[in-house]
Every structure is written in C-alpha cells, then in structure tokens.
Image (cartoon, rainbow over all chains, first blue to last red; front, top):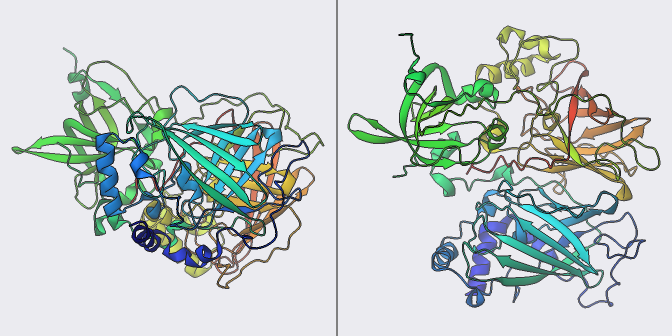
Length: 267
Length: 370
C-alpha cells in the first residue's frame, strides 16, 4: 500500500523531478563519518555550510522512505477529518501539485529542497523553497509573540527560538488551502504547529512536527523525518507555473482558462 | 419630500469601492459598457487572493440563480476597512458593477450595499496608509554602509507604494491608468523606443485591455521591473555573510530572487538543459558608493516584464540602481537594453516608500486560481 501510494504520488507530483530524486538521500551514507555540526563564531548551531559564507540545500528523504509516511493509525482524527483524509488518499488531488504554497512539513518535502538563511543580527530566519511555489517563510526570532488575529495564509505566522542546539518554530494563522503533509491530513484554521530542527551533524537534520488542531483532531500528534544537507548546491529558479496543466483538476475544465467562477452554486 | 437615491431608499450601508477597477486587466474580463444591478442573498464569501469573490443567490423569473461578484484583493479590502466578517452568508446585498464580457453571471463589484442594518461606510484607501515622514536618515550597518532593508538598529519592513506603476521612458508623459493601460492608444509609440514589431505587439496587448497578461491568466512571475511596480511590495534581505541580497517579492506568486554580490561572473543567457532562460534572470550586483548597481540578464520571454505589456526578448538586459536616500525612500532607476525589441537603450525611474514594522503581505496569486 505504501509503495503503491508512493509510486502514484511520485508520478502525479514529482515526475519532472525524477533526476533529482535519484540523487538525493543520505549523501555520504557509505563514506567517511560526516563532519560535525557547523557552528557560528558565537558557538551556536549553524544551518549553513561549515565555512562561513557558504551554504547548502536541505533535501527531503526519498518519497516512500519507511517511516516518513503519516502514521495514520496513531492519529487522533475527528470523524469528518478521517473521512476527508480517506477521500484524499484515493483522489490525491494535492494542492501542492497545482503550485499552491504548502506550509509546515510539506515545505520540506519538495524534491529540490530548501535553504535556511538565519541572519542573527536581524533576529530573523528565512526558509526558502526551490520547488513547488518557489516561495519563502519568515521566522521571527526577535522574541515577539503571534498577532492576536493573524490573517490566515499558506505558511502561517512563524516565531522561532533556539533551545540549546534545537531550533524551535511555532506557527499559527494557517489557511485551509493546502496539505501540511504529503498525503492529505486535513486541518482547519485552528491549526498550530511546533517544529523542532536538530542538526545532528553536518549532513543530517532531524525534523519533528507537532500538530495541534482542535478543529480536526481530538489531541496532539507528531511526525518526524530527516533532512539531508547538500553543500555544493545553490538556490535556483524554479517556476511551477511554467507549464502546469493540472488546473482542470480544481474547478472545472476549459472554463478555468478564463477564470470563470460563475459555476459555484451554494444553497 | 426630497429625492432619495435608490441606495438611500433601501437605508443600507454603502460600501463604496472607488478606483479598484484599476487592478489587473479588469476591463479585459468585464465590460465597462454593460452595467448590471443585482440584489440577493450572500451564499458564500471566498476571501482569497488575488481577488475576493462574493457569491449571491438572486431570484430571477421564478428561479434562484447564483452570481459571482468579483472584488479587489483581500489586502486591498482590508485596507479599506473590510474584514472577512463584513459580509456573511445570509446577508442581503445590492451590487452595482460591470457585467462579464462572456455573458456569464459574473460582475465586477463597484459598489456593494449591505442590508443587515448598521450604517457603516467603507471607502477604498487609494492613498498610502502611512504619511510621508520628515526625512529620517538612511539606516546603516555598523561598518557605515547603507542598508536596503532592516539593520540591527532599525525596524524590519518592506518597500511599497511605487511612485510609478508602469514603465514609461523618463521624460515622456502619457496618460495611462495605474496598470499601464493607455487612455489613448495613439500614445503607444511614445512610451518607449519600440522596434516596429514590438510596437505592434504592444498596441495589440493594449487593444485587448491587457487581458493576455500571463500573470493575470496563469500567475506567471512578475519578472523584470514588474516586481517593483506593485502595491504588494518587496523586501530586500541583505545576507552579508554570504554576499547576496534576497528580493522577496510580494506580488505574483510570492517568489524570491537573488542578487549576488560575491564577484561571480555574469554568465548571461544560457540555453543548456540545466540553465534555461529565467523569469527573474541572473543578477550580479556591486555597490557604487551609496548605490547598489545590479546587472540582470538571461530572461525568458514567457512573462511581461512590466505592467502594461511592453514586449521584450531574451536579449533583454536590465541595469538597475537602488539608492536608499532616507529611511523611508528608495530611489529605483532602470536602464532597459533589449536590441531585440527596442531601437536603443532607454531608462525609467521611480521611488518606493518604506513600510516599517510590517511583514510583506501574504499574497499568493495562485491562491484562488486553479
């Protein structure tokens, strides 16, 4: 089931990226022990390259890697969320495949990867994604709190801080227009996520996502996977809209070309 | 008894909604010669970018028909005092606006009048929310160099409210709306030194009221200078450690591009498998005193590089100059060099306003597109 799903999603979402997929994964798995975790001059963990000024891309585990799927049996779904999830698993109409920016864990599961740009003197961190939306998430590291009533957005409002060697990012203010994982776990605007990033060595970062959404679940749950650093790679331009022809999946057929929104009939 | 307008007769709140027609090629979709008036009950509010929609059930000849009322972006509406709760399903509203050219039940809402009591009046804010401050000095990094974004000592923020929103050669005055649609088509040849084919294409795009705009149709990126012409703004993030500047782009699909200051070579147009021509091109920059000078080449031809539909080719080369003359002001100047479309290089310039202590608006063009 997992492998069938993985193959289908590969074809649906990442077919143009198969070359890159073939290259990713633990880069130096059978080679020498990885370098230690890079640190800044101030001694804090750096998410960049070992040599100051150098950078790299964090790649996701290959699709279908055991343990990276959603542990469905452990998730405390509300009934409607379970039903919607089961439908999504069948239909697989993931918004990300239509160029929608997809927050939380999904931002890290794009085949081309992301770069973390922390600028300590500005107390800010930017997470820039290459594939999919080719967009960015701003993480405020200046000690501010979330706004009282954030305008819902695809990436939400993120605040972050370091707990020792762990980067913690707390996010609220999501809209409901994306999937926060690869397989379609539902969420509502009540979603709050806490992400923990632990760079265990130069090559590997452990990622853990804690999900709390009283609109869709009866309790908290977590999922986790690893990200892999490729130090010889720069951010490059990727425009999902270049030749995205999946739009008929969304609201109709040829009419979408003219952005005809007259067909929605709500009682 | 004095005359009362139809709106006042219904004793409803007026949500005036002035010049929003300037946004996007609205006239490409809606006919300003076909006014429409509908009354009905709100069935759904789709509060999304780039344009919010309100769906209205209207009783017509014994049946209920559902109309789509298209409005400005949620960001624009919020600036005008709307919120997501201003209109709710079940509210009775009256809409006056423009009917879709294709005859479908769609209307561009010019005025929306709410019937659920309350006499609130909302008007679109067309002027910046912030007033020009007394000149405050340019923020600087500890080493004295000027900062294009935040510094450790100054607030974060972004650049918006461009003083010009369409590209016209410096020194030329032509009448056009905020999105580059000419008032008089005969002015087309004055906008820039076009080659004949480029002028013909520009006129064609203008005659079609910009409805072929790839950003409008398919959310293609606002490459070239277009990213500096939108009220959604842009943010400049100086990553000094790695000698590069990120341009975080508020319009289009919230992309980013990178200006490298690390002395790398400008490789220009590359057509190999790995480095096809790009929407944002390849940018290298260097500081010339107080000015950041950026050389960008390697563009593809799949987008409009400015509001208004000026053509370009893959030979396009932009030389951009960014100078922060005060905390609140960014001077932007661009020289356009495209021997494929223009007979000579030409220049344009405008200024942008600092929006301090605010995040770049979370606008995704793709939001309510397919």
